[in-house]
Length: 416
Image (tube, rainbow, N blue to C red):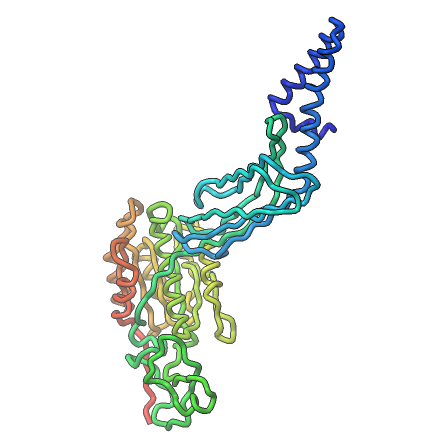
């Protein structure tokens, strides 16, 4: 009874107080009719509280998010399944779901009548503007009676996770001579001149050159196979993402850091399409995500890792040794000094292919003043392929420019 009475609203408390006062007056004035009215006035809010409390117990809810992984500026649908399992019908139900500010406004629904043993579906959409791991919920319901005398709040469902992944841009082409298996420019050819029987084949992937189809293996396996004439240099490519907070400018989704994260995601997924093994590391050499030992990889692993990536407070690039471990390197660098660039260059083995994208962070907003020309000169002097990225240049165009650069690499062509 005490728990049920705690749900009385201000109107209910006033009505209860008025009923008690009328009962007292009826006793003093010896008015039986007034006593009957006071009993009714007192009993009404008590009865309403008990019925509303019972209706609150028989409520269950589930939340469903589709898709569970949404890109920045994408759209996800949230469905709420509200079911009444109590002995009494539920009315005057206000349902509200907890939604972070970055996903939009807090949704509210009013259910005027929910019969017992039945349910209803409520839907709303969220459009995230910032990447990250977002939590939706808890789902709460406020139950009131038609007279507004009692009100109870109950948590129907906990929190659900929504992964807001970086925006991925479609890229075209690969860097010349990178050995990605998509062209003959500078590729490391295997078993050249040793005959058709020595060809290495793999299943066809979307985007492969149809001229590389190995018809003998296709007929034998009843599956389209293509020749593998190139080998990823030293096991794959390392993508270095500079995520230092002092190295980037701008705020929110329009910052240079978000551009760099989106570009790194686009590169990784693009190279995976060519069967390339990818290592994604930070400027300090720490691994963000890597392929499994058998070369298989889930693009979702890259997107989830980048969704959860936070800016590092470190002011310097503290990589000890070659961050790529001898592999080809594609570095996405924020504002950096010529000294840091010189240290990165010195850690790379001679003759190993290296590419870099330097962000002109001043174009994203005010921040540290850096010697962009000096860093460019150092990288190009060391044989790196370099391009400069700006927010007004599409990512696809920046990637195309990088593909036309030529970083140092000791290409070996085996001839028969």
